[in-house]
Length: 116
Length: 114
Image 1 (spheres, chains in turn blue, yellow):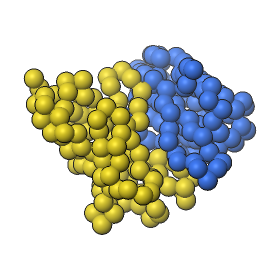
Image 2: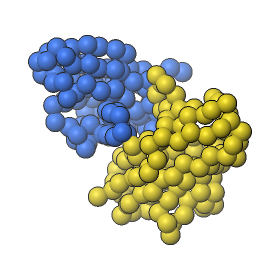
Image 3: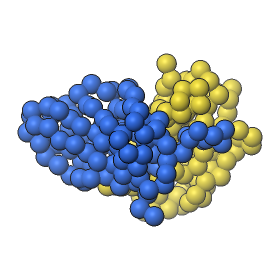
Image 4: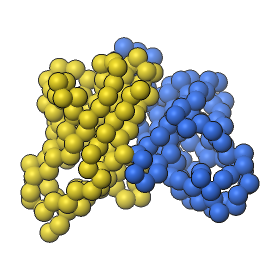
């Protein structure tokens, strides 16, 4: 099992450019999440999805958009990149919709984005 | 608002010594509690989790954590640290009432000296 796969692993952008990060999971999980990780701040939730075709804002959604057209994929888009979006981005997924849901997250290996 | 505090940004311990990483939380609902570990350049791996029942939980790699409701704490411990334990450790809290979105602490970087 591949688990959670993120592409690309590394990317350098110029201010104002756009890009999309792709997250794919093969565990049939309902919930998917995008976090950003910055030194001394832990992981902060950007957007999340509770199922195919649904998305919701997290803690730091500004400057990002997401889409969940297929259950296994969750895309994170930056329409006009800014230096403040330099970060490491993590995708995660979790199983849900049952009383046994425990909220445990399964993470990808991260995507390092630098905006110049 | 929900919050998680890891008071120690860095901790250095000698190989073979015991370890305790602190985590305090502020949550309005019955929490689920997690500890994750992140090795350099890697994603996060679950070490252990607590939902209910016995307040002392065992995890992988010889780690354990104790939930203390009165202190709103969930500290991670290991009796004898190995050099391979050097990593960053994150405490996280979630609750079904909040859609199971996890809130993470800022992390504690563990250095192990030989």
